[in-house]
Image: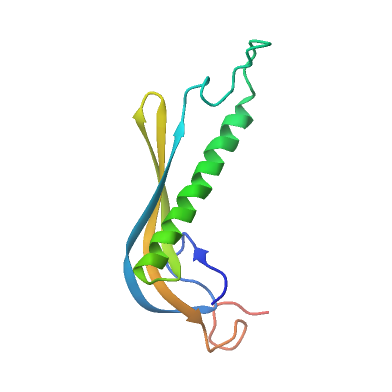
Length: 122
């Protein structure tokens, strides 16, 4: 399997789960301080729009997913199913974002998608 998967579903359409490996998680910490994130310009005194802060959090989620998949590979898996996110403040200035799920070993199904008996049809 070439592409790694991290999915919120419990199965992967078109793939067979050969075995369950372990519970895995990955975290990333982001600063919430407007000064640390650079959301306040010294020159203008204006703050960046909220979408800039959302970009930072979205990037942190991606980093958490990457760390979760890295842990799955370390444990011997090649995908993560039933993935979820959790966020919690560590301090008033720092936020932890965690991705967690079940590491599994998958392979492409022998039965092609769209064949009789599969969930999807063309």
